[in-house]
Image (tube, rainbow, N blue to C red; front, side):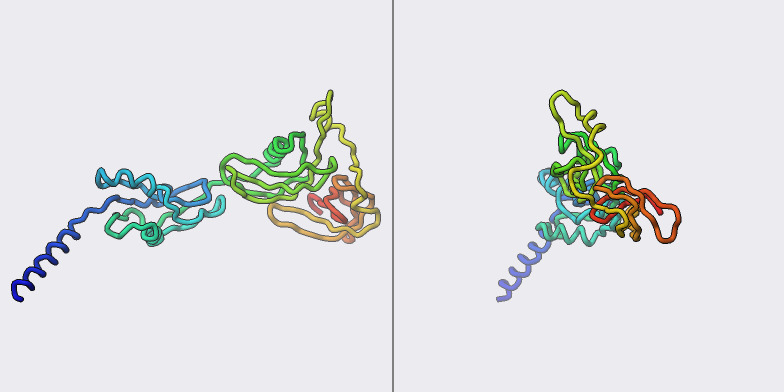
Length: 268
């Protein structure tokens, strides 16, 4: 029994020594700050990775694409700490001895973005609908990630209409906007540009605003929408410019009919 116990102890010691001698496969060095464009933060975005053996070189490509967390909204930031990274590695099947995690203890991630302009929207709509398009009101302020902008929209039934437009960047959904637009129909012998210039003032729909009718006034300042009430001084269809009287002012203001009993103004 004495020799049997001694043999077990020796075998155990050798096994522990062998396991302690196992070398990590990769070194993962976290950065302090990064700026990304995609909607998901991958390990390759926030860290530099080094293979510690020839066998582990083939593991780097998959490791770089490991999803760590959702990215913040464009122009916003989020912090990812080393503990979150270690947890994601463990969930992906990596043991603590397989890697060395060093560098910064947390990474500040910023998502790149820009404010979408009216010109970009008009060009994207023209490409999507294959007709000339003009925005009749300034679009709301929208920040989109960097990348290729495309839109999805249905051809309106009338030349002037409130259009529901879906924004996509690199094929990924960003936002849905309601835009008051004027479009042209292409016919033989007439260019899209000339048709847009000679579109009828009124669409063949009923008046959305009637004279002496109480209407809702909307003013947009960036992402803030301010509402008030006024009295229409003219009949108007969607897209028409009408005068509206305010109870606290003797001077009427101009606005664009943007819906049923609704007028959008620049300011009042």
